[in-house]
Image (cartoon, rainbow, N blue to C red; front, side, top):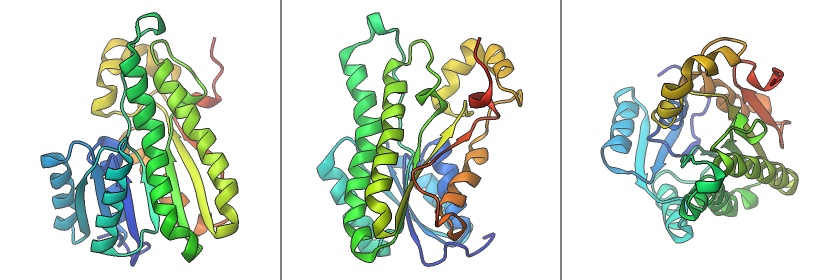
Length: 254
């Protein structure tokens, strides 16, 4: 393990079996936290992520949960609390894409993306703050996207979900600041994960050229910002969105 910065802390990472979520979970575990990997897929991927954490001397658990289901979320949070104690940090990484042009987008795909990316984040935030508020401490980090402010063709559902997530972040930050809880977001650009494979395959070179740093992000590139926002160094930062996108959000789109 690389340090003990988060020793004694319990972290919940939704979408923790995915590319970004898995890297975030490992980052916290390497720094002493007990990490609950919550993922709708469950099974081998989540268990494999936990095995990776334990192989490095960390503590982890896998919880299968559909973030769209409020009762399932409450049960997942209760299971984590029973195993590891109070939850100190929540990282909402769970997300899906169902890209299609607006004129042909299925209503079911619109709902699935909004209910997972935005509704799921709300469910977990709602569940964990019940314990954070009485203790007057807690960190919530939501994984947004540059798509929230830089739209793309075929992503009206995804862009709307992430824009809503950033609005939720700011509103919750205002409510929870007096109670010692910070709420922030990290907005990655295009990250090399299974979820972005189709987009990268169709327009990889063009997308890479649009990024000032001329490369896609790796999941590990996102971890540092998340760890910072969860650390004591960020105790006076709340309601903010940090872009981790190789300069994409700062560039002019022609």
